[in-house]
Image (cartoon, rainbow, N blue to C red; front, side, top):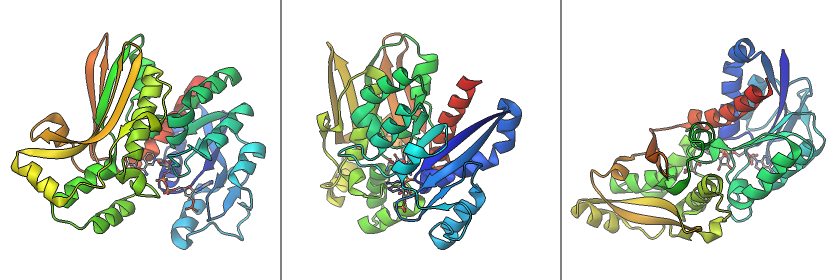
Length: 344
Ligand SMILES: NC(=O)C1=CN([C@@H]2O[C@H](COP(=O)(O)OP(=O)(O)OC[C@H]3O[C@@H](n4cnc5c(N)ncnc54)[C@H](OP(=O)(O)O)[C@@H]3O)[C@@H](O)[C@H]2O)C=CC1
Ligand SMILES: N[C@@H](CC=O)C(=O)O
């Protein structure tokens, strides 16, 4: 039986859901992959940290957080470790980065991943900042250190996009990527059309768990810009940052705009697009009028869609229907399983 130790940075919506899946599937992983996956460290921004090289009691960790809003300060595993201290000196095999998105720098997530890989640790990130800002450097570092580095959750949760390209679209050259990649704006536009108040809609989205810690990251199109950047960096080796995306958010869209679109038989969607022509990459995020009945118009609620055009396989469309946090947790879980599978 192999033992793989994980250090989790961030234990919010994504982190807790991932931990629950891990706990639920513990026995199946043992039986099918002859592996035990232990979590040896967890850090948060303000709710304390846990550390135990023999494995943390995950059920207690999330129940303490959910019941009392912080880890148990009197518990055996309670620790004062900061994220960087855990990364630099903790005992673990895989760092799992799930801290909030800082879209303007990709930090501190990038430093966490860089430092862990420099120590020869494998890395998984749900945080798209590092992929949007520092993908090439991190990928090169992973190769140099001979470690695995995965980031499936950064775009459309656990929907296999990066895995699909890596595993089943070998030698396909991607020439265009488009889609609806941000849940919050899709949800907000739809709920405003029903006559709901903006603040109530954001509060609902926060409760469900998909709105970023700072909602302007979603509303101003930054999250979508980070996702199209991540897709282009990975699928086309574009080497761009979110600053290179021609970006307009939905902050100026009014209920009148939505009604006017409806009268014309159209609907407003925040569309992302990236193309590669003669070696040049162009990327945009823009509120766009879409004909009702068009494929993009039926992507409702928390659903997302991506279309990938390739030279050998033409255009492929992948829709993620009504995801919730389970699919976010699954994205992280699938990356960790990929590491286990490749180690066997
Ligand atoms: N939720 C979703 O639908 C999806 C989220 N993601 C990405 O996953 C990441 C996490 O999202 P989510 O779980 O929803 O966010 P949350 O805001 O729910 O949780 C963030 C967690 O990170 C902690 N944290 C903040 N700063 C630090 C730090 N410096 N070191 C360690 N922990 C820290 C927070 O602690 P505290 O609460 O104490 O501040 C909290 O535990 C984000 O980058 C997001 O973009 C990706 C796909 C989908
Ligand atoms: N805030 C994001 C969450 C997932 O990446 C979104 O709304 O899509």
